[in-house]
Amino acid sequence: MLYRLYKPEDFEALYALEELCFEPPSRFGLRYMRLLVGRANAAAWIAEEDGRLWGFAIVEWSEERRGITAYIQTIEVAHEARGRGVGGALLGSIEDSARAAGARLIWLHVEAANTGAIRLYEARGYACDGRQENYYPHGRAALIYVKRLDSGTAS
Image (cartoon, rainbow, N blue to C red; front, side, top):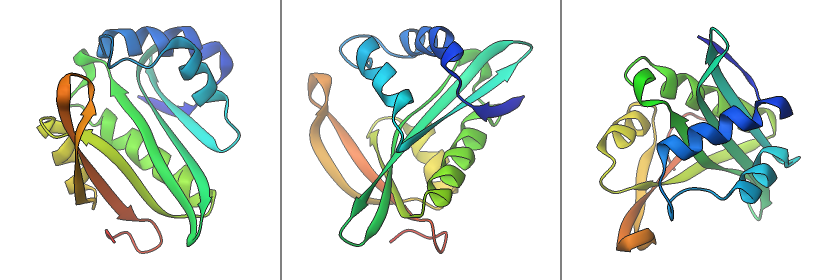
């Protein structure tokens, strides 16, 4: 598997995977996804093999009162590639991009029922820092996970 930064010519395949992974209203809109991958304060990573996109991840960062903080917008892996370490490798790549941008903290929302993703985050040093009810469509709750990037531990 090759892990590399996103290029504009990847967009069609990237959005096709978005459509496979999420149904409306949980799916990012086409216009919003184009905005995300094009932001100067963001990095999108691609996992590909034999010319096929198997996954992608997007992180963005911003200046906060206590320094630069990164937010994981999404990590998506094709169903056929799950369990092969693709999500973990993409997570490592976006963490590296966030560190390179000077981020000291990285955080995300994850659906409370998404046990596979929660296991991945916890195995990589993220800690649950709260719960947000009705965050996702149809009243589904989100857990908030955080990790310090300067020390590798959760805050």
